[in-house]
Amino acid sequence: MAPKEKKGSRHKQKPMFSASNGNAKPIGSTPPSPFSKPPPKLEPFIEKLDKKHIYITTLDTNPADFKKKVFIVPILTNTILVCIILYRIWNVVPYYWAMAAAAPELTKDDWNVPNIMERFFNFALDYFLYAVILPWPREFLLGRNINTALTTEEKANRGAYSSPVTWRMTVPFQDIEVTVRKSKTWDLACIMPGYDLVTDADSVQREVFDEAVSKALSAESMGGVSGGKARTGYALMDREWELDWSLMTAAHTVVETSADVDEKEVVHGAEHWKAQQKIETFRAFEGKVFVHSEAHGWVVWDAAAEVGTVDQEAERERIVKFKDTWMRMGREGMFFKWIEVVQESGVVEWEEAERKKELRSRARRMIESEGLDFEDTLEKIGGWKNWPGLE
Image (cartoon, rainbow, N blue to C red; front, side, top):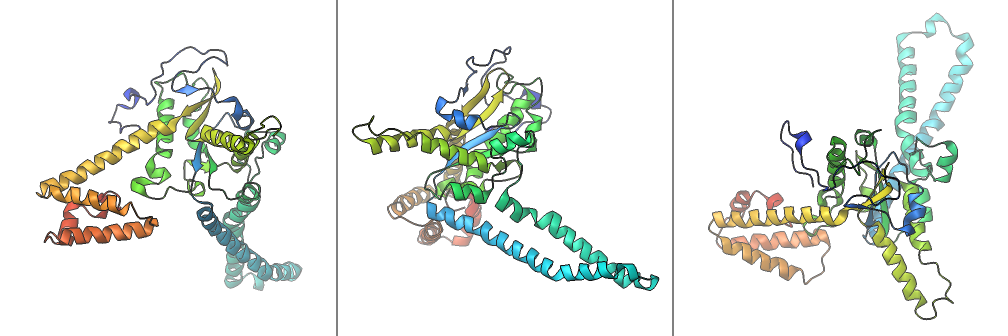
């Protein structure tokens, strides 16, 4: 994760990547480290990417049942919105019809303040429903054009009008799913004519790319901090990234076709071979960043390991700080007692909410067994937010 920059030092900040600048080379040459050429098996997926955007692929390993529960929320939300809109249409159509029928017979007396305010309120309400509320269920059901730079034919070929519903109709709930995030308009600051993110390692554009990708792949964004449940793919949308439903469908098509084989060619262990091929293809999508280079074409950065290392280091720092707090209180032994409590709790399979509740209860008993005031001690630690695993 990129370090915090000091005032006036933005152009001097050392980038995450160690690649050096170089003159553009013909497409096909080896890109500078840490970028590499994507494996050939991903070519059908690569063909659908838009050069003007950056893409992050990760694996959603939450149980299928959990994903179903998450997906029920937007289904219910959009169903309620559709019902509200239909109810409004049912009630307002006669109103507008009567208004239109009476239009030829309107007199000056009809244009009084109450009538004007009534019509203004109805027009404003209906415009709000049309411009603000209607797009939500419409995009959920039918999708929207997310590849605006493409021609109509290209949009159709690339499935640019895919939606959450069409994605789920094509890709059923699975324990392992590929999530594809696409950069929003912030990428205009780093994908510019004359600049190549892959070769211009010391540019400001590279810094923007570095910071945005590091944040998107951090434990804070992905979830799963201190043993917590990782966020499902549907929960990864934010101000900087959106999910590309058509590409998520394409990614799963690549995974499924990677296991296509004539069983006559694999005499023994055909099913095992197919499963192995799917696993390897899934891994090819895990924690990858795809960006287009003028010099090298589409390249991929295996960011998961590097960003994960940064997050692990940050977690270690939190634990050391937690230990130092106990030491300042002259109670270092309490830290080691807590480690034992955590290890004991790991033997039992807990739901995350139950696990946190149980560990907080044990923490209270541990503190009170030492004759300490629980609330006072917790305040000295800084509250649950500074207690690793119990935030």
